Length: 468
Image 1: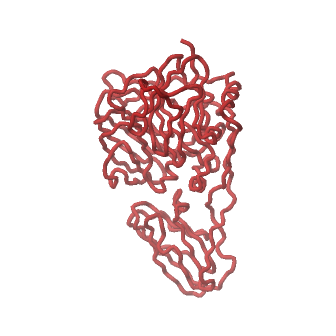
Image 2: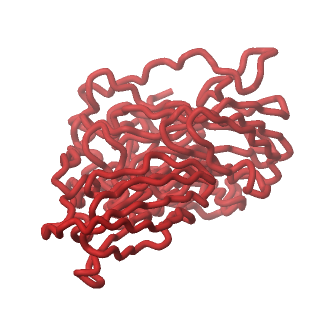
């Protein structure tokens, strides 16, 4: 069964059973224009970064042709640790090259050459021989699985006629990532991610079917990407429990490449439960929560930068003992978007350079600027915040509000009885905590990451507070 992101369990049901579908978020309608003025009180300008596109596509082999010699050269190549060994091969010009590829890794790999020759997928422990053709000049090769080439799985072939020479792949032109209009409304039919926190469960053992799914989603107004997700959403479902609770997760891979999962809320040897599994496989991950906090979970498969940056992350809330109830409770997961071409996965080259196109709460740029969170004047509101990164920090702030409660990374930093207050919750990547505030009067209270460049590129929203 799936863990809901919102809603209370029915009596007698599992605390993680899906609730009734939440009410559709209420659009702000005519408030959108006024919202721009409210936000502009703290935000100046609109930043829409465009970073360089990714690499990938076949390239010509050598420009200089050598006459075939009639001889054959055979070379053994191993794939291990996201590298080919050897990574450079020298072949006499005009020889036919046979590559014997052995996969000593625990994951599937392949080898594709710029000439079009390819090994096909090779599973863990497997070996294949394939004909690379007559080598008459420099040829480049790489693993074609998503992110593996960018992570360093490349091979260079040179000829004896050109000692030491090898050509780097020349990327063909590819479709450009869309430019984001950060003041535009989401596309037709868009529904905001429900940020309401799940209610604290009553049971002590929580079971969840967590499925890897590749989906097309709007991630910014009018901009769609292929996301790798847990249960079809980025972030994935929010889990909740108490110290001492046990979580039993069944991970199923319905995607096209290998994936795994790492739950920070549990302490255990990662060798077994965090191993990557191939499409069609499944595993059981069982852990006991021993410490309170809001904990990240994410794909554990290399390159993790690509898997997390493309949507594979979520939150587990383990309540501190004696946590008091509040009037409203929300979960906001901050992350970055690194856009690839439309309807394709994110761009690993941008992730490696840390050049995000957007910084978002709950998977979509500015969604809560158009579908506001709600409260009533005088309500005590708790915001659980997780910085999923993968790389940028967060500085969560509510414009017009002051925090009288701050809990970060397992520590109480401020309580209502203390004389001081706080203006931000500061978090590094993978860090989490919560803040509480009482919003004093009706109005519209923007919330942002107070790293202003990130607020301007999507990390913002609004709390619409009504009179009692």
